[in-house]
Image (tube, protein in one colour):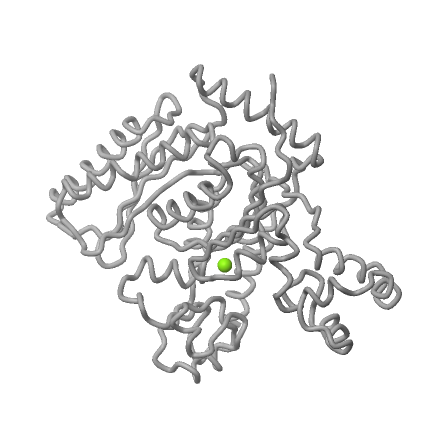
Amino acid sequence: MNVMVPEHRAILHCDLDAFYASVEQRDHPEYRGKPVIVGGGPNDRGVVAAASYEARAFGIHSAMPLQTAGRLCPDGIFVPGDGQKYEAASDAVMALFAERTPLVEPISLDEAFLDVTATEHLFGGAESIARALKRDVREQLGLVLSVGVATNKLCAKIGSDLRKPDGLVIVPAGGEEAFLAPLELGRLWGVGPKTREVLEGWGLRTIAELAAMDVSVLETRLGEHGRHIWERAHGIDEGVVIGDGRTPKSVGHSHTFDRNTLDGATIESMLLALSEGVGRRLRGQQLRGRTITLHLRVAPFETRTRQRTLAEPTDDDLKIFGTARQLLRDALAEDRRNGRTSPVRLVGVTASGIEIGRQMGLFDHVRTTRLNAALDAVREKFGDTALDRASARLRERRRFSDRRTKKST
Ligand SMILES: [Mg+2]
């Protein structure tokens, strides 16, 4: 098979804006447009885990003591945070990433590198993938994603951060050095407060000024580190995106209604849209689910789940919908029998009991073969990027639970 090998890599860095706070604002419409501080109460001893953009306007940022945040913004909405909810939102976002490329390297719950070098031709180019991801994350998950697109991780990462929130920065191939030139030194990997102090002591302010230095001078004074930051200042970064090779335990979508509803038709049509989303994601990752779960949150906070395990695992929208709808009708009928009619606040559907692989049609087979051939060709040129590595997400999860533990002591 003839495979075109691209001239350069196509890397995306995707980063959700004010992640924990945005999840809270999504799930609590009354929080929207207001300063939301996640991490605990204004009198607690812990630190801020996340602040909404409205809270940042008061000078609040993550890692700041909660009590400081409480003084800066006494009327802010302080919430303890819900690690499980953020993990579920993260899983949903990562699953969208995985639809575009198998090479997804999660950096934390809300951040990942994607190498789309081998797959961009399937989706109309790296910029189209970036725009589609931003749209899907907004429409399907109610969150806002900033993306940087570049030929390496360094420029993609700096790009995603440059125009937050809702940013999209594209660094053209060959334009890496010019892109970095006007930026301040601290944006460069490897230039922490200590190195920065040294460089500023020499009168350097911008990345361009660092790039203009004689590399041998940097090497003499800073050793190997000096050469590394000089290379980065020239936009050079060979770091590869390492796919985490994981299979999700479940694939699910949910929707919170703006107004609680008792209308069966409204709930069912939403359930259809959600089931289609789940089916599409399963097919995108070549997965099938054996168990379908319906989630219902009724006013005010009671959450109910009902599930059914199918004879055969499925990735079919209508099979998922049919099962979820029956579960919904059973649940509502039971409520009526018990004389309860609580309006529905949230409806969700999840496929679990995930199995890899499905019976592929001819087109799928051709596409998969092409994809694999393209991946192999890219690996040959740019190195094997498909190594497994312990996921950084685990570290992030532990960090969050540590924070919660600390807070309660
Ligand atoms: Mg983020």
